[in-house]
Length: 179
Image 1 (cartoon, rainbow, N blue to C red):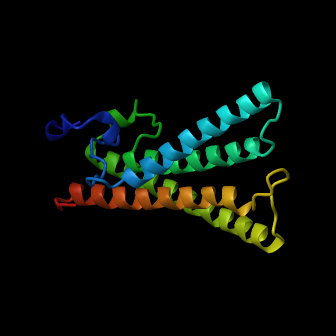
Image 2: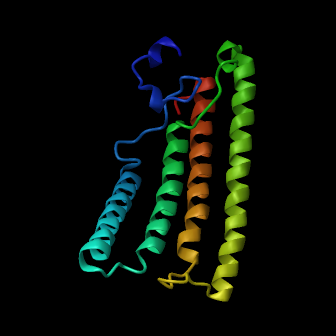
């Protein structure tokens, strides 16, 4: 990590010490959505437990809705992790690489990650079209399957966007731009 980035918290840097792109409220909306989904899930689960054990009438659709909420939370969370550069990395050898080798490795990592995110988003789009055409719904709550499954496409598209923005900023910083 270079000296001018020492004050930057590690979770806001990628493994090359480049600070994650930030705006005053850039991710605020996503944090709010994730918080609401989490609190809603806790409330629904509590209501289901009370209904099941205190009243003897569980909420029959609660499990399906909770699974959908978890899916949305995971894939929105994936976009946040990508934006912040907080994913797992193996940097034992990376730390010993020279500047040029790190550049090559970073380009490779960003390219592979972008390719995978876009491939999964495209495959998710294919599945969403199939669900739309067939009108598929869940068994208990009869929720259109397009709703929980669209979380994959949206999450991976947001992750791809995060990769592009971070990669652009990193390249500008590497070549003396102001990002």
